[in-house]
Image: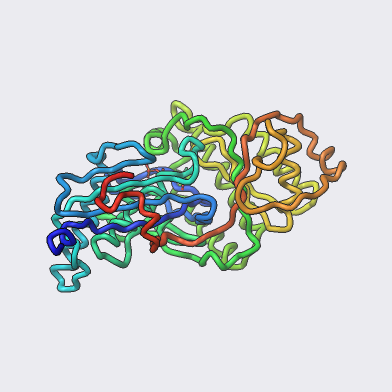
Length: 399
Ligand code: DP6
């Protein structure tokens, strides 16, 4: 019996959130360490709607490290996966040598089995790598008994992943050091800070993004002088203003900066040579719609932001959600009318004023948006205590 329990794998399951940047990260000064050319700021989305779940099992009976993503075995030798595994083990070894051992049953020499799933389609172009690497690092840390600052390790999986290590409003401070030790994420305000803030993800297409962010930003750094200008002379000031807008819950200021920064990021993509296009005709229609909506009311009630794909992420305040959803349904008539078009937080029905429709005055684009995910700011990574939720069997192999 004792033999058996000693061989039983040590299993931990955690979840981690997606984040959406309102001051964008685009461009690295060090590819290997993933060090950015500017600081960035994001909102962590609620895990009730969007999350990655990862189970890690460690056992001395495992022959090698292995990983399964969304049900399929993937290559564990991927350099970024290797960076995360190496750095967590390095930290665990350091803690043990410092006599501050979190290592009890889990041996440092043990190999791990990793299994990870998203509760949203990867192909939807949502930031799955951020949630994925954040979850991997958080779960590995638990398995190896390491605590404390982990965003510097998540960053080495994917830059934006470091911001998914915290809930609420998070900045990634670019840092100055060559070794990247000061390039870390930090919470600006917790998820409870701005309860009226709502986030709507308008899923424009299920197609995969044309140019990945890693190679896209590489070309931008090499060819775009607008990107250089942005990193040196625009982003630093915007970080200060954005933190201030978040602290004061100043929606108009937050919204304007968010839209301008998204637009500047896409302008740097156009300034890249050869140019990169992430915005589709649907994205452009959403941009026009938002500006016309805001000018109809004579105040900034909505903001859009777009990452390396055509999906729009809309920020607004709770009281404006029902009407805006009606607007989206009207100008992007869905395939199936009703229920499944809106996922996530419930949205009340409301009337759409004829005058508002007229003021927006766009030609409807049928099926332009497949569905909308309604969510809000949420917490950082969490441990799942219920063992029935493990993605690996008790022997440490996939179910
Ligand atoms: C447009 O973090 O995916 O979403 O560091 O190469 O993995 P790598 O890139 P990634 O880039 C994200 C770019 C962005 C903006 C942002 O999230 O800040």
